[in-house]
Amino acid sequence: MQEVVTGRGRPAVRVVSRWPTALAVVAAAGVVLVIVRFANEADYFGASIATMAGIYLFAYGLGRPWTAWPAFLLLSALVTILQFAHTHGVLPFDAPVGMAAVLVVLWLWAVVRRRFTDRPTFAVQTAGAAGFAVVTLLCVAVQPTLGALLAGVGILAHAAWDAYHWRTGKVVHRSWAEFCFVLDLIVGAALIIATAR
Image (tube, rainbow, N blue to C red; front, side, top):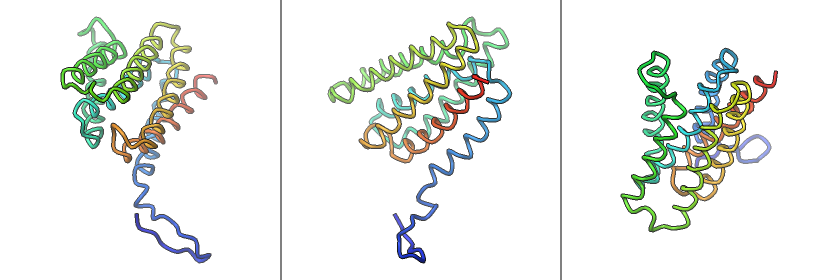
């Protein structure tokens, strides 16, 4: 990490080293615009909880922390396809249900790859996947406004998940944990505020 010295003699971290935070702020700005337009549509936000949990399971299953970044692109594309297919009557289930099922598949894949040999980490990932899957399904099982509010709470809970993984340096690369933490913090808070209003 490069540092520059300010006029007061204090080290200041270059903005370049905080690129995950900067990227998250830009991404969050786009998501906030969607929230303003679709605040009461839990389908648009509930699936994101399972998607974020899936990114961690994907990287964990492979045992390569850097793969969280391509997993983000892959699972984001998948949730978009599921949403589109459900909206147009191609699938009998919606995106949150589909992404909860994806979590189960990713967990089974981690088991097949014998990732359970690291029992403490496997237990944490299993608990996280189960918890976020339940919250995802609850988002669509309740009244839409309540579902959107619950989605906001679930996204904030995922920010805590990101912070834990950033601190431990396990499962995903710290750049991903930082990006996801900032994104979740802004989006979760914005969703709760927009829904409550």
